[in-house]
Length: 324
Ligand SMILES: C[C@H](CCC(=O)NCCS(=O)(=O)O)[C@H]1CC[C@H]2[C@@H]3[C@H](O)C[C@@H]4C[C@H](O)CC[C@]4(C)[C@H]3C[C@H](O)[C@]12C
Image (cartoon, rainbow, N blue to C red):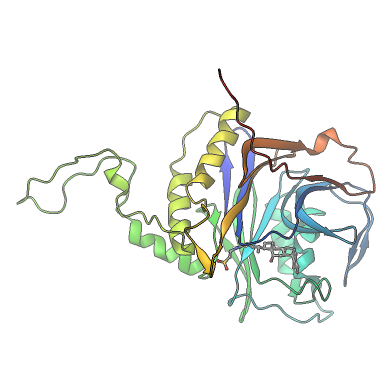
């Protein structure tokens, strides 16, 4: 399971948890402006916006999981297994393989409006990257400081939803996730009043009772409700430290500790990494399951006019600050 979220203070932030039982060996990967991107059906793009994100690099090609570009647009792919249906290339619209969807959008769109126009003429294909990497059943959140979209390629076509919750998890389809939020219409960060019955002297015996009923489990629909509630009520200052710190708290509300989600005998899904991208400034922040210190890679500290991928392994070693 994975959860993605957006956050706006002075700058715009987008990030995700990557929850799974194993890692594909991903690294923070910068794609500079002159790295030639070979698209399967759409030719080679020689010059484009620079991108930074998390990717598995296969044969010098970045298979992105989540990324932002230098213009402030960000995107993340999350599992949508059982619902995603991709098409065959047809040569009518822009045929884009699912593994190249993130670089396709982020290399050429400066904002959500440009992305909307691009999506209108796109056909997402099931073309695998290679025999080792069959196509992944995903759906995507795509966002900038003006808003967010959810993109789902399903049996009856490519669906593009406005995403006012600013979060995405996994199944069921996005319209159902949004509908299920109706179940929580009564929840609030404020202390509740007694609407149960005037005939009973009910009162609050604890703080936090306004959100009693917010689901605490790790299912996708429950994480959707919990992350949406946390994000929509988030309060922070707008400095970089306060914004990034608050963003990690939002995704912290849905993180997965080893042991609570068993996917096979003795195998557990965990939060492998959590990312928070400052899309305004091109900085990729992350923590990992074993390293809680926030680490940052800043695209603007690299030569963005280069033509070679730049990648940084995730730092995995926990560092405890001994205060005495
Ligand atoms: C497994 C990851 C999604 C994690 C997630 O959503 N977990 C929820 C599990 S579930 O709902 O409860 O089943 C996804 C996110 C991005 C995916 C990767 C990216 O799409 C990039 C390439 C794409 C290739 O086609 C397959 C390998 C791959 C390297 C993908 C492997 C895997 O499917 C990843 C890593």
